[in-house]
Length: 194
Image (cartoon, rainbow, N blue to C red; front, side, top):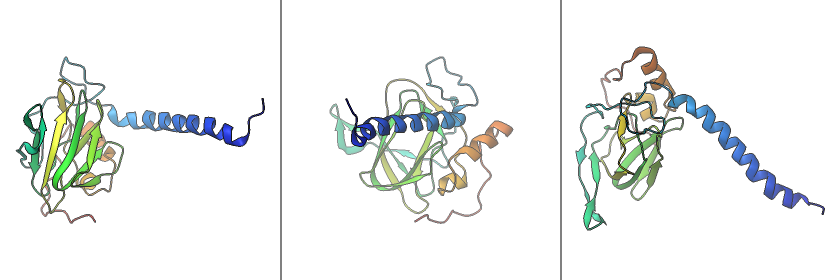
């Protein structure tokens, strides 16, 4: 049987993409190393720990009445302009959908993304991420954890990550070197990213 180039490309291309994905996952796992978790529950490799300070400023838990799950309004939160969670991960993952306003999300190793009404984000089991509002707009998220495992917290999201200029490695390295979770106080609100 003679294989033509079309058949070969249908076989080789997916295998090549899988190999590239494995390389990226292995190199991104660098960002997943760090402080061991303090919980006895499975954490899927998350280096975080239980913390009382979990965000810049304070967000307001607010269910999303228009989304009903098992007869109840879906869980949600409103983030004020410039507010965001610290880096964190969920043992079972987290699903988020921007219900209103403009939000921002980022997974460790990737650039921040801006979400608009109806946009979704999924952070899988143990994936380090953060979410919040843009500098000048509130964000009302539908957000829910998957499963019953813990949410573990890491360092505060730095200005460069928040503005989309870094991939979350600088703040992680700084935290690993110093043990300081809180980033330096900013004297002015960061400019909007378009």
